[in-house]
Length: 160
Ligand SMILES: Cc1cc2nc3c(=O)[nH]c(=O)nc-3n(C[C@H](O)[C@H](O)[C@H](O)COP(=O)(O)O)c2cc1C
Image: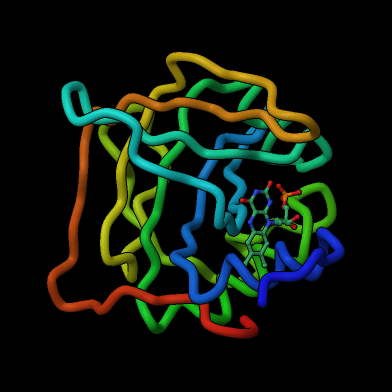
């Protein structure tokens, strides 16, 4: 029987298993940041677009206000540790690329890193944004896409 439930408990039940992704942004000064996200979706086929929802308190939010590009990275099984690091540490306190020794090649759109271990990577330009409570939904148009057929997509099951 369906029963009234506290929101944090219900929220916890509806999101697993989940697809997770990494978002690469450019820091306001120099260098790049990475954040783990679960709240993203495709929003258009022609032109191809993705929406990502980023909390206002995140350093990534600050980066996206300063530089209007992001790479949406679909992680492989070997990127579990990186997802955990990027989902529990802020770019304000550490350079995640350096700490995790992330290997990448330079992208084509705004030269943002394309991660070598990823299953797929989409280079996006922010074309609009919408406030959604304490998050902002950034909508990005895909200009270039990359894929790695040797890797398998990572799904978030219980804990990273
Ligand atoms: C599995 C998982 C999913 C997450 N999803 C989101 C999300 O969709 N949006 C968001 O703003 N933060 C999300 N977070 C939290 C951020 O990854 C986390 O706060 C991160 O440390 C922020 O990094 P930054 O300050 O460098 O941007 C998620 C964390 C985890 C572990």
